[in-house]
Length: 323
Image (cartoon, rainbow, N blue to C red; front, top):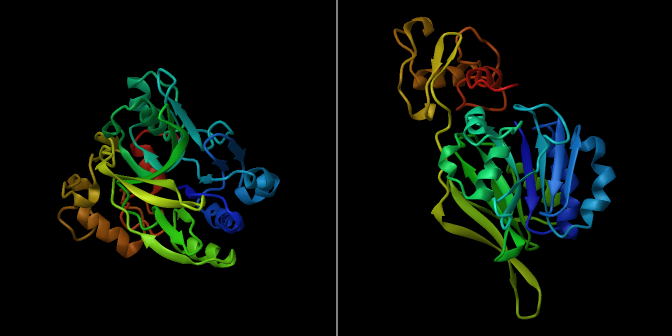
């Protein structure tokens, strides 16, 4: 689990908000952290509160910024494996740099198909975006923020998107009474950080799955700049939440969004007093007991993951990823 946050622009208000959101998001990932304004990259191993002060003046000189706190799932904890990640088109005319909170469950399959050596599953997303490859090939879930550059857009545009994410800790976008836009993995930290910085949330904007949102500057008649939230007319389609059928201790994990599936598990994967176990029933079981639904595992499923049937360790084993 990782955390993301960022701003349409870095102003006096949002610069004051940054350390508060950094502290709030540290609980979602302490292995490394990173930030970018689309051109400059900061990638640091360790918790963000351990070293943010060393980079505060440098980041404070930017006019915009997005931030990531990593809880490593796939790939070692190294500087290179810290977000943000970059992708460049084959002809070099298109570049994206961004952050991801989530999982790409067919990470190894994409490495094989495209002869890549991505250590971190998230890297695939930005290669696909830069090369305009079909995102429908990417299975998993998550929340994205990235800057995109091409010949027609040399200054870069900030895009935001969520896909296959049924978690309450997903992606939230707010506009402040002082005019800035703020996004974060969680809603309440935005409210608290804005109040601490001397502003207030004016509005939270509803988001639709797989819709691409952009934050673009609008120059007023007096020369001042005001940002607006734009919504792309089309959807950016991703693949299903999980990869192909795999075995975990002899138990098949079925492809697809499990909350919409009624595919039964084998008879030996039964809970007491129940003739058959469906994904819907397992979902209710986890919600009631708070334990992992994978047979033989009784680990507590934390972070209010009421719609994730199994704990992270069992899931990573099931998809064949490196924890």
